[in-house]
Amino acid sequence: PEGYRTEERLTLGDIFIAVKTTKRFHQSRMELLLDTWISRAREQTYVFTDEEDDALKTRMGDHAIFTNCSAEHSHLALSCKMGAEFDAFLASGRSWFCHLDDDNYLNPWALLKLLSSYSATWDVYLGKPSLNRPIRASEMLPNNQTVQPMVCSGSLVVDVPQGETELIRLPDDCTVGYIIECKVGGQLLPNALFHSHLENLQLIPPSRLTQQVTLSYGVFENKLNVIELRGPFSPREDPSRYGCCCGVSPQTVGWEREAAKW
Ligand code: UDP
Ligand code: MN
Picture 1 (cartoon, rainbow, N blue to C red):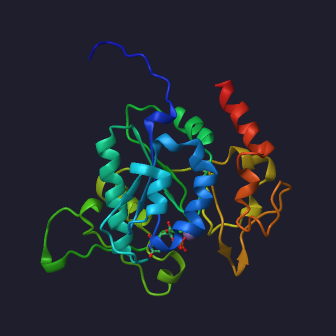
Picture 2: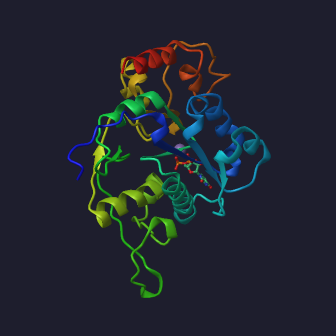
């Protein structure tokens, strides 16, 4: 309306990063994140969990958010945390919402670079589907209620046929995808810079690793989904291979040089 506006340059401060975790992973997974990428994005990263923990509070202060969601790997418990994340994002006034699990590595500079290529004037939904085919989802509203399901109320249930549930375990990100694509009419813009541990890490060319926005580790087809990289930490010290990307490595120095260029 004012005729023109100048595009402000996006900064990390414009991004809200939410990490979902649970009590039993505070030590085994969260410590690893805090020692690596979260230390580079401390100001905009918030952790959502299900049980008070002094150790986590000491390290994260008020960026550790203890939800009242139950500590379960059920779709309702996970959607409850996603709801808490989204509410906190809305309250933060930041312009981008970024959701991660506690077994995801984030390269904040690559994220910033990617988001900088989109205009902040319209809604954008970026990510990567873990599966290369659609799943069937149906809405179940208790007692024939007709209220619009919202992730924040935890009332939306994404239902997939038996068998497939084993594979995708009804994650909360599916719930968000369902709301955005089926309810709001938005569309996911798939981007190869995101990575799910349901995909083989070996398929990412080593030269592209430093440009990846996210990387994830875990067991895939009964094998540890990791890649061999030379780095300062032995596989015993760092079974997840997070060490290959953390503070002291040449890769990270490379990222920071990249970030300094734009
Ligand atoms: N998680 C949770 N509650 C649970 C189990 C898992 O909030 O009871 C979180 C966990 O911290 C992680 C995500 O859900 O951020 C996915 O869990 P996991 O990686 O163990 O399983 P996946 O679904 O990836 O196979
Ligand atoms: Mn996982």
